[in-house]
Amino acid sequence: MRGARFLGVAQVPGRLVDVGRFPGLLLDLTTGDGTVTGEVYAVTDAHLALLDVVEGLVPGDRDASLYCREELIVVSGPLQGQQVQTYVYNRPVDGCTPVLHGDYRRYIREVGRDS
Image (cartoon, rainbow, N blue to C red):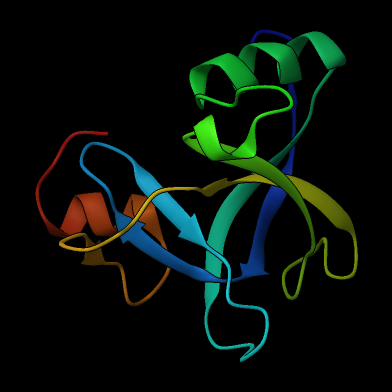
């Protein structure tokens, strides 16, 4: 991601689960419960194309995509109120461990796993 510019840490609405070696952001915007902490970067279209591949996004086929790119509004932090894009997990989460506090970096430290 050479050239991507770090903008800050932000919280978006949602829930987080551990789907294996990666986090899975889940949206349930009807209840408004939960926030997820992440980092925001300014990226180019080339960065987004690469991220789409890494995240298993299949253009034009939401059902086949492992993650889907969605636009959300930052709910707290220095970027509050700004619109950002993020990847939302697009598979069943039965058996996945919830990350109750919504911070995956903190979670992997707590469980003793390298990121």
